[in-house]
Amino acid sequence: MENTKRKAPEFLCPIYTTGAFLYPVEWVDESGETYWVWVVDEFIDDSFKEGNIFNPPELAPTLKELMVNTTDDFGLEKDS
Image (cartoon, rainbow, N blue to C red; front, side, top):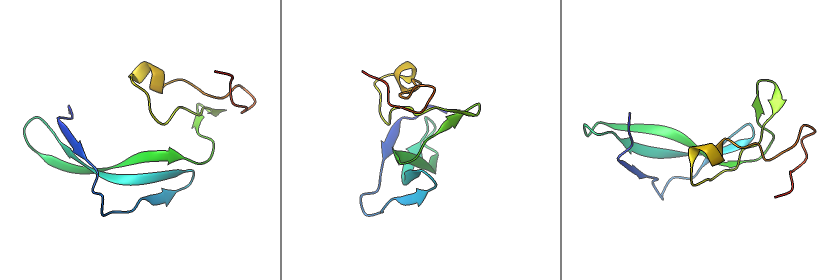
């Protein structure tokens, strides 16, 4: 489903789940169908991928840059 329009309701506060804040976002697909989804806004604790610490950036200009681990094998922040 390709996103054609997104908007976060400003009147809604985020919810907290273990390690992250989530916001509801309205998602409208190409056919005009509307869906509501939860979107991570901020990570608080470590994230994991295949059992290893994997802390991606919260924002990135490309999908490739979003899939970068910002911590090393020991969970320490990598130098930029």
